[in-house]
Every structure is written in structure tokens, then in C-alpha cells.
Image 1: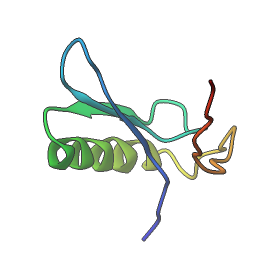
Image 2: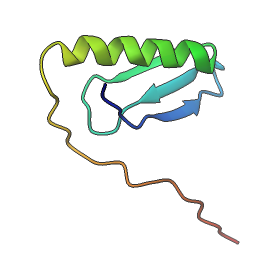
Image 3: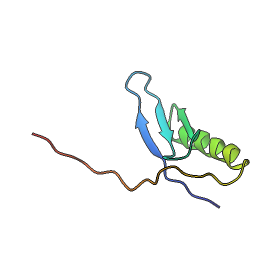
Image 4: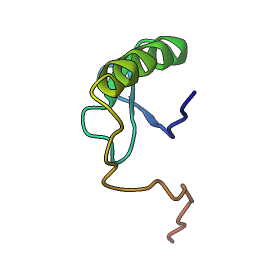
Length: 69
């Protein structure tokens, strides 16, 4: 079993959840719910991994809040 971090945003125009795996080309999807997005991302990753292990171009370090006045 492999694990990959995913970034998730909600598009204000469509209302869809959009997710991608940083540094993994092609590893992105969308869904009307978080559950649907999760299933879609899992399916995309399974398909991409059929071609072998990815060469990740970046590594997710984290997310933090920047405050400005």
C-alpha cells in the first residue's frame, strides 16, 4: 500500500472539490463531494502507478497561514 499527500481546494466558480498530488504529473482530479474526489484521485493514482513508480518532482512540506495587515 502506498500513500501520497494530496492538496484539495474548492473552486468558487463550479463548487467542485479539486485535488492533486504535488510533484506527481497527471495526478489530479475533481468531485462534487470530498468522498467523490477521494475515489477519483485513488483511481487516477492506480492508473498512473500501472506505468511504474513515479519520479516525484517536488515534495509537499506543509501548509501554513500567513497573516497580513
